[in-house]
Image (cartoon, rainbow over all chains, first blue to last red; front, side, top):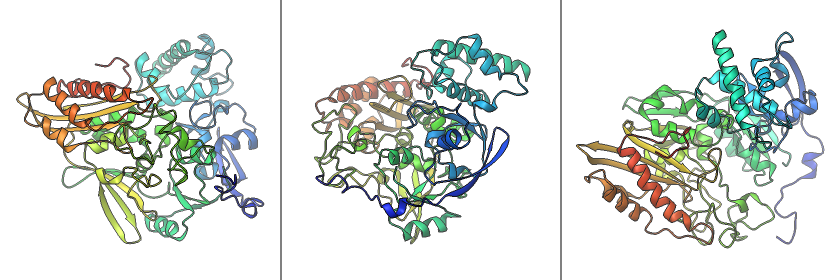
Length: 176
Length: 338
């Protein structure tokens, strides 16, 4: 442990020219082709390359859910997803939830219930809730809480988040 | 994260060929644990081989009444699979007790088995850890060891295996199907993960050039009398301090067959044939449950911060066996212990 570099297999020659790989992502209905390094996460590709800053970087380790996006309609942590592995995938971020200028029922419900304070976790909460509604597994408040546990809100807006999801669930259920 | 190369495998044979050709490569599927470990510089593969395009995504009933689960079936799909919910509800319940829905959507069945420990020191590259850096020492033995093991530990390592799903798979006596350069083989679940001994850097008996292709469940699913109870430091989205998978077959109030596995207490899901034998033929009552718990925890050894786990495990075993016997399994979305 004396030599701080002894553990590392870091090779400067391997890092000087990252081999970029072309990927095509269908983001919020738009086809986007970009060249990324193998280690670029979907989160960094969305934020830094496609300038979709709605998706947030919180812990960057899959512990907080702020980076939640939908891939093929399923909620995932974008921080633990490599962009190169999602070539051809359909991705929905918070920017893509509203349609024709109208807020998504979840976005409206979060406003109606004041389901946030600082707002940093909110895009992830809403994308996660959209995934939850599509899954159709949560019916009761207990089930919503359990299936939303991957989204941490350090302001503690949880009661209002649950109420907002219940409202959207009712609104969307009555439409279908 | 160090820089690495990326490659895709076309099929199982191609995956085996690629991994055999490069000792510095590793497979990636869901990536929920591997990417995290790479960000912490704990895992430093020079090349990732993406196996997510392999045709290992189906769940099929087998000729002998069991179920064959492709290694790439996502954890969430498996938990909600109608056959699993109906015939193997212990497995469904254990999966839903772990991680978050986002992670379960990403994580694969095979990858769940390959999770590394969440021991704080394994993750902290500034500290010695025999699992991360063989021969450097164990920081947990005399460190903050609340989350560490009480059974099957060694002087080299007191890490636990973090999976919930694997505790159920151990109780159900699943088989792990793997493929390698020499062909295919099946590994009994009890033989898949290993104890740390003096080589804690080796988590499993999977060889470096092998790939998990499927998990096979036997016909017996214990759907009537089972429970998975997980005790942790917060009510959801946390690793187990202690978890218990209990599965019983009852006949006239007596136990005909019993399975009992513990999570959060050892380097692998913990079972003891003697404890299960002590349940067979007995009335499904607290006397028998207490005897089984006593046998299962006989050799338990606590450290400075986790000795509480021994009594916690004893109580959790009694409660889980009672839940199984009464056909009132723990519901993962309910935080009241039944």
